[in-house]
Image 1 (tube, helix red, strand yellow):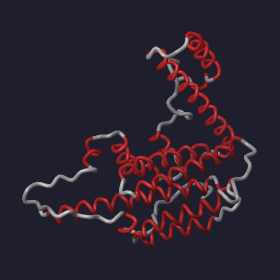
Image 2 (cartoon, one colour):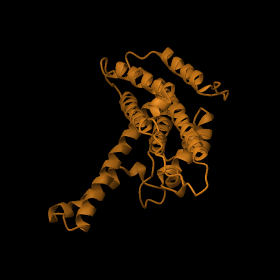
Image 3 (tube, one colour):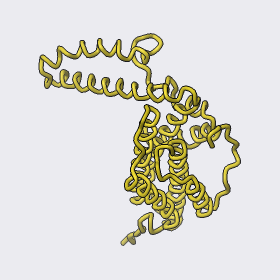
Image 4 (cartoon, helix red, strand yellow):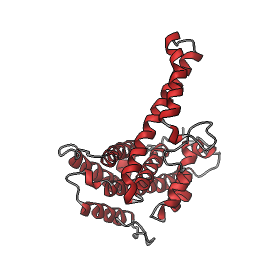
Length: 286
């Protein structure tokens, strides 16, 4: 009879790594919930607030997935966290136009909501569930969008821009004041994209084939090494991206303490046995 291999949950195998995550989550709960966010007085304030909340929710989702040994799915969410940081950096890239950029970001949100409504109506029509009155409103709705969101027409005026700023993720990473972003994109973001797009690689991460004659202990250890490496990478990157978002949007957190950012980074480097990165940054507000 084949012996059953019982593997302890990730938090029991790596308590020191999850101590980092718990530290971050506890601190943000302390900052955000009892004290609340500062009232927004501008579009930029509002974008900072919603970005902080979104980033925190993503991070907590990453925590839940890692606790259940689903690093593959945590990586997909970490990719969203990276994009969130890039978009905030783009809004803040030129201080003199940050407010206008934030307003544009919010207008694109309205376009996206309108496009979702159109898709819903078209689906209702295709499935025979749409009322005649609602179907007649569809063309009028599309026409009104042409005027309301003309700034987001693509160059050929045959559709809409795919992003609020006209840049894709690679372009956002390239234009960031922080040169490490392009390395995040090339090395890490592409890896996480493979998981998101359900490539063969993503399927193979969830299963380890064992053939007759294989050394079971070696196979299990190899698998565990891969699990640990990916878990560490996701914790390192997602935590770094989150605290950078907090730094950029800190004006909206009344209890924010910048020293805590450094404490968390030191905890990460100490726990994971890493040296601080030496890549220089051109960002003025760091």
